[in-house]
Length: 230
Ligand code: HEC
Image (cartoon, rainbow, N blue to C red):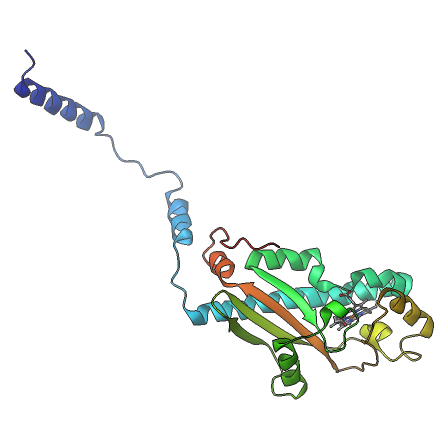
């Protein structure tokens, strides 16, 4: 008969058997160190507000540096090869593939704004006008980082005309910018206001909007949270 006692004995025996069966020397798991490192990497870090603002500045800088370097390189190359007509398709560094890859990585969207733009879509408005006023009155020379409500952080950095090559399209018409080249620009940008600049002039500002959740997700090496369209 199957009594409670015999059931208990059976369980005890089985357990003893299993335990003794398991009595093998414990080998270290293969790749244990890597697994521990990977777990550490996925641990949610405690990020302070300061950490997040400092990261915005750092990643904002890297996006702008890459975009500006490629912009000057590509414009110089295409101006030399085929003049203004060949260079015009390379006038939107915010849309270069390399810039977009970085933006996606850090959870940012970048734009350039000006008070007298070539493309009317780049006209500065609202807070951007104030930023530009601060830049032109030299109250601020460099980068600013500020929180926009709960979810976003704005990074701005002034755009100065530093390279001679810019004058071929933004200089004075009839001087650095020939009349015939200007006709080409006007054809595409009939409302153009972006001429008459000199070396060293403030031309506008970069404005990068970081999604706070996406940035934190990047810092924690986690999948992105926001569902905003890119
Ligand atoms: C081949 C001509 C050409 C050259 C060279 C050129 N630009 Fe432009 N630039 C343009 C065009 C065209 C646009 C409008 C792009 C758009 O549709 O967003 C533009 C737009 C801009 C804007 C955005 C605001 C606006 O006016 O729409 C800034 C800022 C700017 N350029 C700065 C520069 C700087 C700095 C350089 C030199 C590194 C430079 N550009 C060289 C043609 C040029």
